[in-house]
Length: 594
Ligand code: ATP
Ligand code: MG
Ligand code: MG
Image (cartoon, rainbow, N blue to C red; front, side):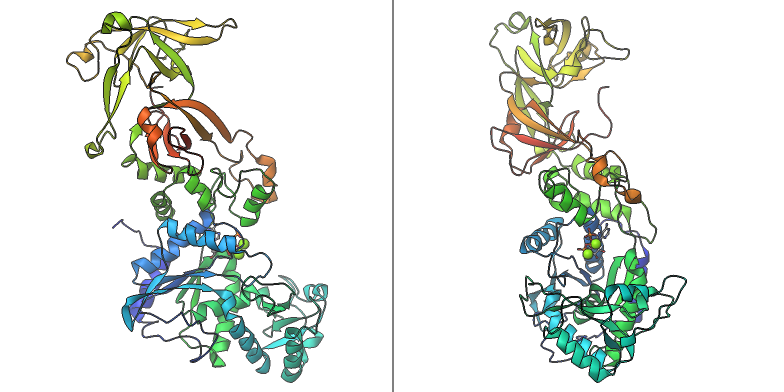
């Protein structure tokens, strides 16, 4: 069990558990209510949280914070977390997004299963659609109208805006505010029955036009919108507003702790007003859910807005939602981030009410900490230059000789076994491991210098070959005899540099996709800046390199560390056995051999 530091939400939950706030609770909805989801029995969960995405795009790393928080609290306190599609907005929602969200939450390592108390062996799937509650929401709205808590306002949108007042000025009452409940009920039914045009009227809660909280100045709770809904089709031409729908969704599902981001803090008084009013009217039962807010995740060099991410995709700035540069969960997955690393990242950043930006390096550190102890090692050459060992035949007796080499698959995990490869008369090395004129402190190949070919032999550089344009096409060196790694006396010849390599005779050509940050500014959309103006033109580079033979056979989504180069993942779409394609997830903490 990882150590989980306390936070204010844990404090609230622990106090509620101690006080028995939610003990022995029944369905919040009225008994026998058809709107009450048949698949939603209250199980023995001690607390009930929910993750309520709107299915209008793919989930991003900000959502991961909310997922880890809500599912994590349920896990830690004997509760259950519901996955709820907040699909009350008919226009933007699609099945593709619903499916992708289900996949993403599962991939992150969570599920929405509870246990039916009557049949503890039977799992209950707590997956819901807010649109399944439209009937109840409508009836609750009629009840509000009948009790004088809501009215149909037929002012124009501008009139409503103008009479709402502002921070310093109280609002003024709509002329429609004094209609009788009977008149309002007739007009509300006319709205529902399609007798009014889109936008001709809204249903408003009747609270207080002079409230210091503008959200309590008679907020709209239903609007007219002729749009086909993915779940309810053309059944409705009126749809509930988010601020009205969300508290009801929570209450109907028996949510105990409704956790959301701080932008909704000002909505909490309405959340409370609505649920308390519906409890008073007998439509819902106490104890009802309570809303608690935390600070959203802002991650540097990333935008976390579905709308902006969709724009990157739609305008072709990236190669789809799962482009490895995208901060979507499908993008992070394709890039090679592990579910464990994302969970670890969310644990480390914690939750608070303080607005802040998290450095992207925090996510990379979590990835490294996760993979360091797991990922097998291998050698790869990203920018290949040929090294010719000119005395090979003399040292080994034949120009065809291949010298077997071994290396541990992982330096600290002997159980992962060893890698076998061979050294021959020609090997690929990194182009920048050779310098004709070495800069100060350069310990790798330059004429007259000795280096070790890792797991192989010490070689002494004698020069290089150039083409007609003066470009270096090969490096020349001689093998220093009796220096093979792992043989007695191999260390007698001291060298300051060790370089990685792959034998030309067995190297597998590989496509190595090297990604950098998508934006050149740490806060791409700060201060209203158009984030497209700070796209990094060099965020994707493709290297044609070589990898160890064994690496050519790994499965898609296998992660490994190429020594000196960082962590890589075999691409889930393009990688083929014998034709490897790797994405670099992130570099190594300390760049090696500088
Ligand atoms: P976007 O603005 O990108 O569309 P959203 O908040 O509208 O995001 P929803 O689908 O409504 O997206 O979000 C589902 C849940 O995820 C909400 O509870 C929301 O508070 C949470 N969430 C969204 N973005 C973040 C973030 N950056 N950090 C933490 N939680 C977030
Ligand atoms: Mg939203
Ligand atoms: Mg939003």
